[in-house]
Image (cartoon, rainbow, N blue to C red; front, side, top):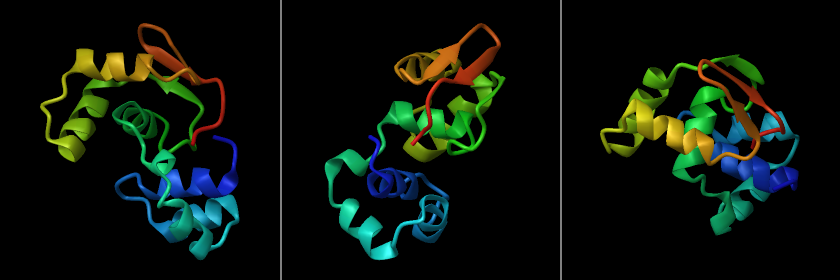
Amino acid sequence: MSDPVLRAAKLSRIPGVTIDEARARFGVTRAAIQKARKDPASTPSLAELALAALTSNGTVTSGTLDLASIAAWIDYVNHDACTIDEARRLLAQCPQLELSDDAWRLRAAWP
């Protein structure tokens, strides 16, 4: 997904992120985001929600891996009793992410 409008729409669907915050970050209009939100591609997957939690919505590019916090946030958002192992599996699905035992690095911009 490289289109800034679609990226902004996806970001605006992350719990806690407003359309106005996404608009400001990507420099697109509110109307364009609202239109793009009708596209199913603008809905983040569960793996992308985990990636959002890990990367502070794509604003942090590397750090220490805190799977317990990610699992807790996914559980809060999805009400699925997400475990640490499930959080690691979700993150492993993200091709733009490089994981090690206790660290991570974002290889490409997200969203």
